Amino acid sequence: MSTNTPNPDTTAGNPTPQATAHPATTTVPAEKPARTVKVMAVLIAILFAAACALGAFILTRQLGASPLGAVGASGATFLGVSGTALYIEEKLGIL
Image 1 (tube, helix red, strand yellow):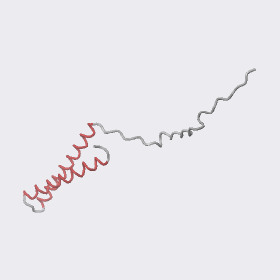
Image 2 (cartoon, helix red, strand yellow; image 1 turned 180 degrees about the horizontal axis):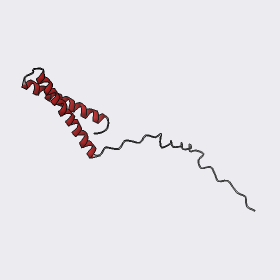
Image 3 (cartoon, one colour; image 1 turned 60 degrees about the vertical axis):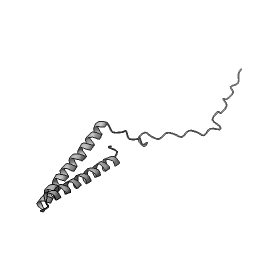
Protein backbone atom coordinates (compact mmCIF):
# COMPACT_ATOMS: atom_id res chain seq x y z
CA MET A 1 0.00 0.00 0.00
CA SER A 2 1.39 3.37 -1.00
CA THR A 3 0.82 6.64 0.72
CA ASN A 4 0.03 9.70 -1.24
CA THR A 5 2.29 12.58 -0.34
CA PRO A 6 0.95 16.01 -1.10
CA ASN A 7 2.83 18.13 -3.58
CA PRO A 8 4.79 20.93 -1.96
CA ASP A 9 3.24 24.36 -2.22
CA THR A 10 5.41 26.21 -4.76
CA THR A 11 3.38 29.42 -4.61
CA ALA A 12 3.86 30.02 -0.90
CA GLY A 13 6.32 32.87 -1.45
CA ASN A 14 4.64 34.26 -4.56
CA PRO A 15 1.60 36.53 -4.35
CA THR A 16 -1.46 35.31 -6.12
CA PRO A 17 -1.95 36.87 -9.56
CA GLN A 18 -4.76 39.39 -9.81
CA ALA A 19 -7.74 38.48 -11.89
CA THR A 20 -7.86 40.25 -15.20
CA ALA A 21 -10.56 42.84 -15.70
CA HIS A 22 -13.49 42.27 -17.96
CA PRO A 23 -12.61 43.13 -21.58
CA ALA A 24 -15.40 45.70 -21.77
CA THR A 25 -13.94 47.71 -18.88
CA THR A 26 -10.35 47.80 -20.07
CA THR A 27 -9.19 50.68 -22.19
CA VAL A 28 -7.65 49.79 -25.50
CA PRO A 29 -5.19 52.31 -26.91
CA ALA A 30 -6.63 54.04 -29.94
CA GLU A 31 -5.22 52.96 -33.25
CA LYS A 32 -3.54 55.51 -35.47
CA PRO A 33 -5.90 56.80 -38.14
CA ALA A 34 -5.27 55.67 -41.67
CA ARG A 35 -3.55 57.92 -44.18
CA THR A 36 -6.81 58.42 -46.06
CA VAL A 37 -8.51 59.69 -42.90
CA LYS A 38 -5.70 62.16 -42.30
CA VAL A 39 -5.84 63.48 -45.88
CA MET A 40 -9.61 63.87 -45.71
CA ALA A 41 -9.36 65.69 -42.37
CA VAL A 42 -6.87 68.18 -43.80
CA LEU A 43 -8.98 68.69 -46.93
CA ILE A 44 -12.10 69.31 -44.85
CA ALA A 45 -10.21 71.87 -42.74
CA ILE A 46 -8.96 73.68 -45.86
CA LEU A 47 -12.37 73.68 -47.56
CA PHE A 48 -14.05 74.96 -44.41
CA ALA A 49 -11.43 77.70 -44.09
CA ALA A 50 -11.87 78.66 -47.75
CA ALA A 51 -15.64 78.95 -47.31
CA CYS A 52 -15.17 81.13 -44.23
CA ALA A 53 -12.63 83.28 -46.08
CA LEU A 54 -15.07 83.77 -48.96
CA GLY A 55 -17.75 84.76 -46.49
CA ALA A 56 -15.37 87.23 -44.84
CA PHE A 57 -14.49 88.72 -48.23
CA ILE A 58 -18.14 89.18 -49.19
CA LEU A 59 -19.04 90.59 -45.78
CA THR A 60 -16.21 93.11 -45.69
CA ARG A 61 -16.95 94.29 -49.24
CA GLN A 62 -20.64 94.73 -48.34
CA LEU A 63 -19.61 96.77 -45.30
CA GLY A 64 -17.65 99.13 -47.54
CA ALA A 65 -14.06 97.99 -47.15
CA SER A 66 -11.57 98.47 -49.96
CA PRO A 67 -10.71 95.46 -52.12
CA LEU A 68 -7.27 95.19 -50.52
CA GLY A 69 -8.79 95.36 -47.05
CA ALA A 70 -11.28 92.64 -47.95
CA VAL A 71 -8.48 90.41 -49.25
CA GLY A 72 -6.53 90.97 -46.05
CA ALA A 73 -9.52 90.11 -43.89
CA SER A 74 -10.26 86.97 -45.89
CA GLY A 75 -6.61 85.90 -45.70
CA ALA A 76 -6.55 86.36 -41.95
CA THR A 77 -9.82 84.46 -41.68
CA PHE A 78 -8.43 81.59 -43.77
CA LEU A 79 -5.31 81.31 -41.61
CA GLY A 80 -7.24 81.51 -38.36
CA VAL A 81 -9.95 79.04 -39.29
CA SER A 82 -7.62 76.49 -40.90
CA GLY A 83 -5.21 76.63 -37.97
CA THR A 84 -8.02 76.22 -35.46
CA ALA A 85 -9.57 73.34 -37.39
CA LEU A 86 -6.26 71.51 -37.67
CA TYR A 87 -5.58 72.07 -33.96
CA ILE A 88 -8.98 70.63 -33.04
CA GLU A 89 -8.45 67.63 -35.34
CA GLU A 90 -5.06 67.00 -33.76
CA LYS A 91 -6.52 67.10 -30.25
CA LEU A 92 -9.29 64.71 -31.29
CA GLY A 93 -6.66 62.26 -32.53
CA ILE A 94 -7.58 62.45 -36.19
CA LEU A 95 -4.17 63.72 -37.28
